[in-house]
Length: 427
Image (cartoon, helix red, strand yellow):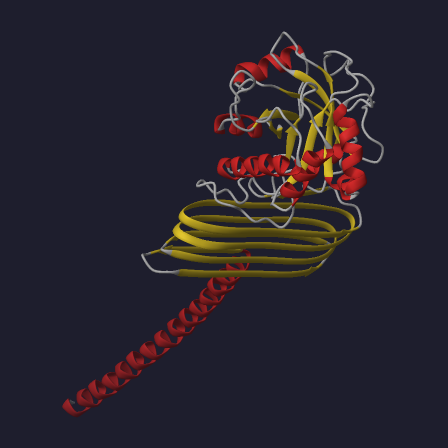
């Protein structure tokens, strides 16, 4: 009897051990593999997401007392039905010397194309170089939307060189093509020289790829532009696209352009025509060069970007000869600015005769010097009642605009119709 009990206990023990072993084995097999597979998939998804984000945006932050060099290159090649590309490059630099190079290249072949390129540079340094380049090559059979924005917020103590280059090559229908430098493109708060890729420096003219209008309406004034004055013009005359203002104050004649005016006018999408009126004797080649150099220095000190035209103001009572015009033109065109002249360009006036003589001596003046004429005088009107564009100017000259109405009692302005080509040399 005891022996049977012992055998039963032994059998029961063996069965129990086998049950425990099987339970442990099956439990391990059901828990280890799913955990491993889930972790691998998660890591792969995270890595792919990180790679995609890096290809579309770049951010650099440098803070230190040494030199810094940043180079960002973004290349996208897309061949699809719909091509949507967004590129964002941001650089925050605080260093002694900085070198920042940003290059964005997009090659898109699609029916519908949307490109948005943004470059933001925020730099505090003793000096440095900033090179921004955007190249868009688009082959779109239906439409393309291109938005380029370059914003340079630069604070330096010595010297800075800024180069902004935007190239758009579009084949097919182009719905929108906007090249902006922010409009803080090449913005240097110390007023240093800024080197752009073209005369517009991102701010001037109709550099946004839109078709240049034949004419636009505008005003000029010897008074400082305020919000109240702008409202006065809009309420009584029209909505100007161009506003002529003077470099530096000329006592008894005009108040000089201020930084606050520039901010206000640009915020309202109004471009500035720059006038120099600090002479009353327009004779002699050296005299013309001297005043041109004075205008250039004033423009540089004020922070006016390269490519803008500086208009020499020749009043009818001033003596004027061809030598002065030649001297002005030669000095201005040798600088980073464009040449311009204002006067009553009626064939009976001295400025008309002097200009033709200057053009005979240097035919390039006909193609390079923008003429702003005050002839004929049709009288002040509203924008809606402006006369048909019919300025008087020398044959073959590069006409920039017509001041057809003088001395409005309301708002203290003159009224103008400007030729569309002058938009390329305005601020």
